[in-house]
Amino acid sequence: MIGKRIQLLRKGKNLSQEDLAESLNISRQSISKWESGNTLPDIDKLIQLSEYFNVSLDYIVKGEENRVKNNFKDIFYSISILFLILANIITIFLFNQNQANTDIIIGLVLLTFGIFIYISTKVYYIDKNENKYIKFVIPLATFIPLNLVISIITPGFFTPYPFSIAGFILFFTLYLLLIIYFNKKITKNSK
Image (cartoon, rainbow, N blue to C red):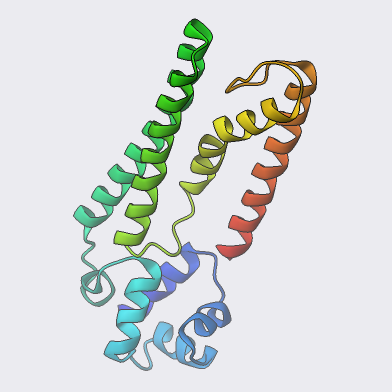
C-alpha cells in the first residue's frame, strides 16, 4: 500500500525512480523495493517523501489525504493571483482615466501585496515543487514593471502599458521571451 502511494506520487510528478532516489540521496533500488512492497522506507525517508511531494504522512502511510492543508494552500495561491490581476486591471483603467502617477503607485502596492502572499504561501507550506501557479504569477507580476521600464527607455509617455509602437513591440518581445524562459525553467525543474 505504501509503495503504491509512493509510486503514484512519483509518477504524478513525472519522475523516474532514479530522479526520486537522487532527490532523497538514496539508491534507485531502494525506491524500487519500496514500490514493489519488498521493504518499507524508514521514518526519516517517509518525512522526506512527505515534504518532497507536499502530502501528509497520513496520506503516505494510511492513504488519508490532508485536504484541508491543500485547500488553504490553493486558496492563498488564488488570492495572490487575484491581487495580481486586480493590480494590472486597476492600474491600467485608473491610469487611462486620470493619467496620474498615484494610479501606478496603487497598482504597484497591489502587485507587491500579491507577490508577498504568493511567496508567503510557498514558504509556509514548504512548497518546493508547486509550479502550476507560477505560470500565472510571473506574467502578471511583470506586466506593469516591465512596461514602466520600457516607457522610460522609449520616447513617449510614462505609462503602465505599451503606448508607442516601438514600446509595444519591445514590450511584447521581452514579455514573450520572459514567459518562454520561465516556462522552460519550470518544466525542467518539475521533471
